[in-house]
Amino acid sequence: MLPFLIVGGVGLAVLLISLIIGDIFDHFEIGDGAISGTALGIAAVVFGASGALTTTNGLDTVWAYVLAAALAIVAYVIAVVFVKRLTKTSDGEVTSAVGLSGVARSTISTAGGEVSLDGPHEVERRLAYADGTIAEGARVRVIEHSGTRVKVVAE
Image (cartoon, rainbow, N blue to C red; front, side, top):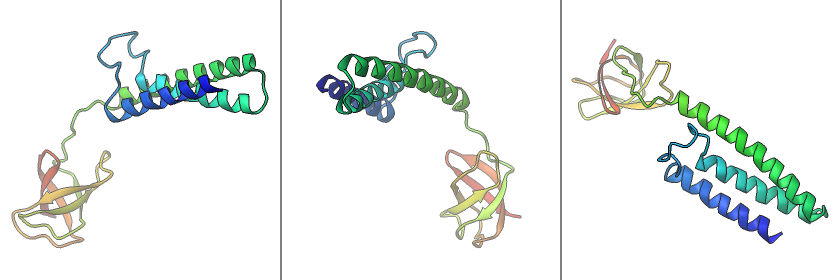
């Protein structure tokens, strides 16, 4: 059972490094994303966990390795597919919020405030500012967008 625990522990470390720091294989152009640190980490964790579970439940060691390897391969393929899909959907381009309408979630002034916008990519509140004071709950429209902040006017 010790080899399963070691492989699972190393896989967990690789997975955490890939999620926190970034995929360690991004710098290598191998197979158009076929090798992913996240997917390798997931596969190793699945290998270790399934091997440890099957061993503790009395399955022969040979079959524990076979089952663990099969489940790890399936987990790797599924993870690579999802990583590729997520990579394709996140284009990294900032979409402009200029022209969007929304609601002031706090009083907005030249010093700042918060708004919720009605755009398709708007899921959270944004920091906002205005030339004058806009009361909480008022409808607003974005006239400028810089970084994470938007300049709004009352509608």
